[in-house]
Length: 446
Ligand code: SF4
Ligand code: SF4
Image (cartoon, rainbow, N blue to C red; front, side, top):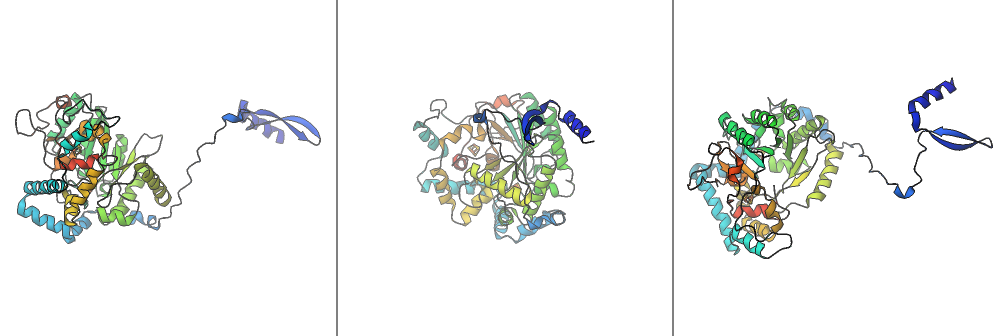
């Protein structure tokens, strides 16, 4: 019986058996062992990377997370907006001045802060720095910042959001109703189709998943063979009616770039609203369960960190390691990359700085940390940004500051209805202003 088992075993392992000499009862005999095949070239031996230990899942809150995250976040968001002094002040000012006037005033404050510091406008500053001949920086090619080949079409498909974060530079909330219409989405797809240089459709908002044209655009871009990125607030996936949105994204190979400014509930809820942390964790676990961030799936789940206050982000690589450890150990969550971004001194964050009397010191911090090496890869160089009603901008920040790209020889804004391909934008002058220092500080921002 034993003999038969051995024979069966030999068949199972086949030719990988190795012959070794063993001593038994004073006599040597040849036996075959399956794993006795280590090479004698010991100098070439390497230790493999240790396998990831299982998560310790230390977070108590995981127990009833599903129960706690049921239902819409919107009533909580609206309640916070009604109670929060800053939201109340902004709403009153908006009523009194209107959006355009408020944006103009905000711009003046930034410019005043720079002139108090004796700092010229962004473009002049950039030219002076470029002339300093820093190694690795091209000094001759341009006299102004210009668009290169457009590779990304970023569409802000609506300002509606189930959250109302206190750093939001698009001033989104459940009260905003602006949303892209199908005819505008069709024009975006036409531009994608006519622009072989564009490899990626980048959908943003508000909460893009909650906007009417979301699925239409994802399906259309997928059919055209484009890569799709969705900038997700995560909590939108737990809104009633969104139960299958993550599966829809998986089925269309959509990559997720998700905001998570900390791995603790306290900081996330402080910046993004009560209840946001729990829902973000629940949504991240769902994306993981669908294969996101698994090496073999090809589905990317990237996270975005932005600072809580008026300081620059910590080094990206080190922070990514810390996030990896915390999210895995406490919540069993995996992700691909962590991007650190600098808070732009515009809209709600600009108000936040102004009220705390920190606008000038923040502008000084950004200028002091100007990094000439970021300019070549700044996102406005290879991206076109479209707003919910089809106007075209250099980036989402310029969109919020109403700095539209103008049609040739006119003051009229350029829209997706006037151009049929992104080729028409190549070489165009990029409109910059004082907020651009937010993109060039430290390691840059994207
Ligand atoms: S930061 Fe994002 S999630 Fe927060 S309110 Fe703005 S759009 Fe919504
Ligand atoms: S804000 Fe940044 S991305 Fe936008 S135009 Fe200025 S430098 Fe470019």
